[in-house]
Length: 569
Image (cartoon, rainbow, N blue to C red; front, side, top):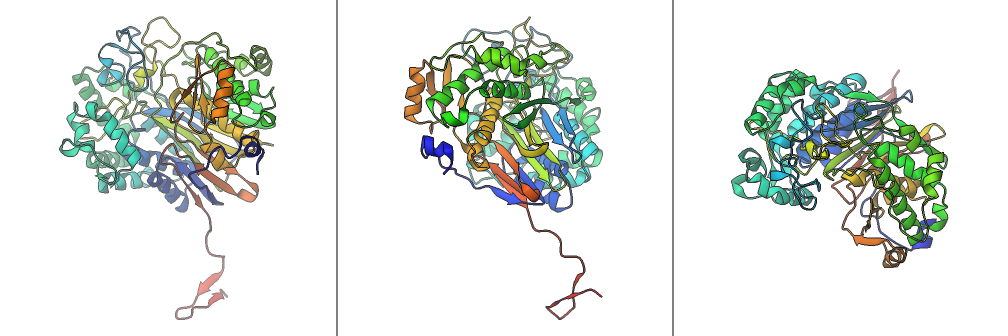
């Protein structure tokens, strides 16, 4: 019995089982996408081949979360030990301006909780669409680090788009949630609401137009969109709907390589992405603060531990406004934020017995509707990628005849002028994505990530605590109940005990129960002798698949008509 269970009791029961293998591991938030990645590994491909095939298939089977007209960030560990961060985040179109939306009074409104604007224009429709980055980023990663041709990588996605697949209850619920907006756009309604009725769990979803788009992409490569006829058609259609994205915006987009953020926690090296995502910076910052406490001794799920975690989260969010923005526009003080001496200063401000409000930073809203993929191969390649079209079904429109759903990434900017996160032409969106890799003694120990908007990096940090301090199994670590706070309230998932909630309330925390915090985490653990373990949690349709076995022993032959194997002469 592990320490955290002996202290907290049987706080939760895992709903899923991990997968194990030695020749590769793929974990994603849909079984068909995971199987697409495993297919690439079985065909002799590497972790990059598997990850990109998984993502393209997710655009078919998890269309509410990710698409080739979205954006995201990837962390790769190459077999030689090099870590590469690829920033494929969307950018504001050249015609964007900081006062392009009119902010109206009222609480945070549309999908993702963005600041309300007139007509919800920064969230739904053509004016909400930023320059897409996924297609070029994924193809560039594949070109540089993959081993299989793009046509092979796209084959599973094309197959599922063309032949259809069974809608899961999770996808059916998302379609129902978006039905009101779908009804306003005939192209997207035809796919998800045939005959005017939203697809139900078990129904078959076919997107034949998207299959044709993917076939064209397989034949022509990313130039089809970036500088090609499809990019022009996308821009022209969106402009006809009042959008400002141009073919030139799409053609000029470039993914960027960035230096990873590196920190340490109790003997583990923690590696994550830098701004414009806050994931790496603030995971390291929070871990630095919490390293000064005996988290293991205080126990998992106890009010003492949860209070300290919540206060560390508030501090991270108070500092987030100065760090999470496009570094080409605002220089982020990364070195200070991840410095252990700075963590000492911030830790000294925490009262273990009383909740406090720390100096707030600038807060923008991000959608929780994203996806994540974690892959490893037998040669030391690791890929952890978080990708999205931002809100549920992005801008909730479809480009006619293409099956493409654009992002609504403009919602991630602050629609008010004069702030660090305000809109500017060519500026990259902000994010909380945190695809992490942890090393122990210079060797990979864990790779993990998840969707979930503002709750991503805090959830990833809690998984690190679960693994390092509470000695949880990988499956327990991804499924364990989470908390979240960026200010006055402390959100808790249902399995946080009533005793813990009462203890938090006594410390002045305003506890708010939530059904889920963050999205479906998936992770890989690296063991001795090349052993791999993969796990996905209950918060999405996550599935892990491990590749074991291998080829026949060299020299073995079968003689026709003789069932006994004979050694070759």
